[in-house]
Image (cartoon, rainbow, N blue to C red; front, side, top):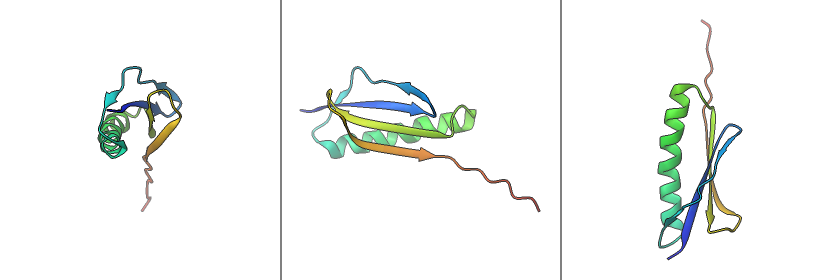
Length: 79
């Protein structure tokens, strides 16, 4: 079973996933990356610690095979 790693970027901060998780295929890893990214983004956005979260998914030591990108844009409208 392939092992996938989820490296997290919060703006310019990088958190490398050294351990990884086993998934049957890249589709399982994609679903986990979306859940992980959404959870991290929610916390970072509410705390104001980041406005952009990226999850790079890589299989073992290979280059990333997926990238999940979540960006917060807030526009104040004067009126």
